[in-house]
Image (cartoon, rainbow, N blue to C red; front, side, top):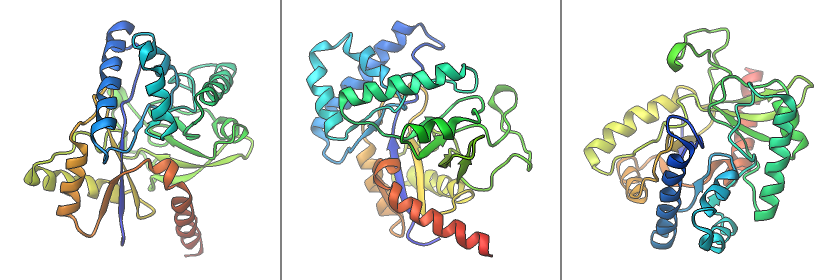
Length: 283
């Protein structure tokens, strides 16, 4: 595959309360935001950070740091903080249809208050996905979705099971809902942490990228590859800009950069995907 572009997305998958009480996670969130602001101010190569498809994390942070509201607004305006489109991180397969709709509506309203939304249906770790998701997304003006489950069967302790009937050979696909609504779907085939903790040491980076690129290539249907730089409650990788420079030195035939793939590359990516899909249908 020629002219491969690797889009490295800095993020942190954020459950408000999970293996620690809510306030313990919140203090980690405050530290995350403070470190993000330091990077935005001191590293011009650090472009953006994805806040896990939620807006409620902004409220959680500002209850502790209300003096930083203008700073949060500025970074959202500049496209550095990527928020929404949902209000909270939901498990859409387990909650009611009413809760799903209201979570979307409230999220859209909150995004409108701040001025910008990613407009990407983001379901990184739901235990299955509801059949009406594309319908709800389309009604909300959202035409692209990213998700981590619902295609490959998952067993005990998150073990991925081998089952050809339900396993997609591509990380890009059309997701069609029960009513026929369709959105462009991006499967985290190698999970939402496939680009976590990228080394800056050249020897370590060479080993890291050889394996990671091979993993993505196994499922990619286009030359636009997605690497998610983060994991559950993961602090921001502060030397990510240096790690990207090293990657570009090691692999001159591949373009690595920090960019919000699902927003800035969506038109180019969709055209490339459609062309690839149509050719596969003909052949």
